Image (tube, rainbow, N blue to C red; front, side):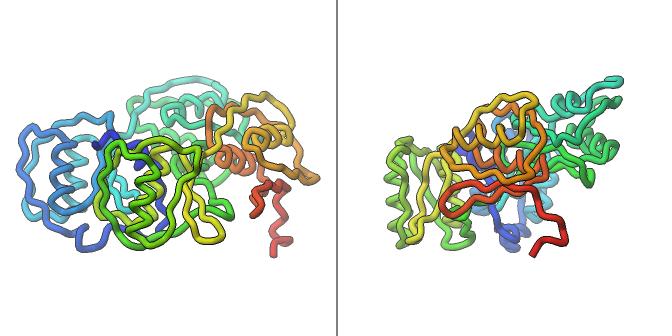
Length: 350
C-alpha cells in the first residue's frame, strides 16, 4: 500500500502556514528495538502506533539496526534517517523518507545549460532557461549530494532554480535551489486547508464512490467530472479532508477546482508537449494555450526568443514557468483566458 499511494503524496505541496503535525504527535515517545529490519516496515509500525502518516520512497530498500527509548518522534525519525542514509521531509501532514542522489562530474569549459541539464535530469522535470543563462564554466565534483552541487553551481554563477510544479526554471538570482513546489492556483482553484480530519480505505473503488463518501461525511458536495473514470486504491489515517481530496486528485493526474456554488470537483488535468528551438516567446505561449484550449492575449513588449522541450507537463506549470524565465507577468482570468504582459516597473505597481 505504501507504493500505491506514494506517487500522489510525493508531489503534493499542501498550502498550510504551519505543519499539520500537532506538537503532541511530534514529541510522542518512540520505543524501538530493531535488528536488521526493513525501513518501510519499521516506519509503518511507528505510524500505526502513533497514528501518524509516514511514507518511504518506493525505490528505497534499506535495512537498519537501532534501539531507541522514549525518544520524541521527530528525533526518532531523524535518527532512523541518519542510520539509513536518508532524509525526512515534512509535506503537510505526512513525513516522507527520501534518499538524495549523489553526483560525480568533472568537465572543463562546458555550456552552463548542459551542466544544469545533467544535474536536473534525475528530477524527471522539464527545465526552462532564462535567455540570460548563457556561457561556459568548469566544475569538479566527486560523490557529492546533487543538491549541494546545484547550490555550488548557482552560487558560482549567481543563478537560482525555481520550481513551478513539473517545470524547473533556471534564471539569474539569489543563488537558491528549489526543486519542488506547486504552480500558483487559478482563480477557481481549490485552496482550502485544515478542516475535518478523515480516515479512508478504498480498494479499486470508482472515483464517484469516493466522492460520494466524502460528500456524505462532510455535508458538502464533492464531485468528479464525467470523463474521470479511474478507480482509487488508497488508505490514509486522520488527514484533513482538503489534503485528502488533493491526494486523490494527484493519484489520478487530475486537478481540484471549486465552482461558484462551493462544489469541489476533481477534473482531468490538461497537459502539453512542446518542442521549439529559438522561436519568439509569443509563439511558445500560443502553442501552450492552443493545447490547453485556452484563449491567450499577449501584450506589446512581449519580445525575445525561447527554446522549449516540454513533454506531457501540466499546462499551467509550462505557462507560468515560461513567464518566470522571461520576466513576464501571466494572469489567468476568471473566465479561463490568459493575459501575458511585461512585468511593470517597481514604481508602476499599485
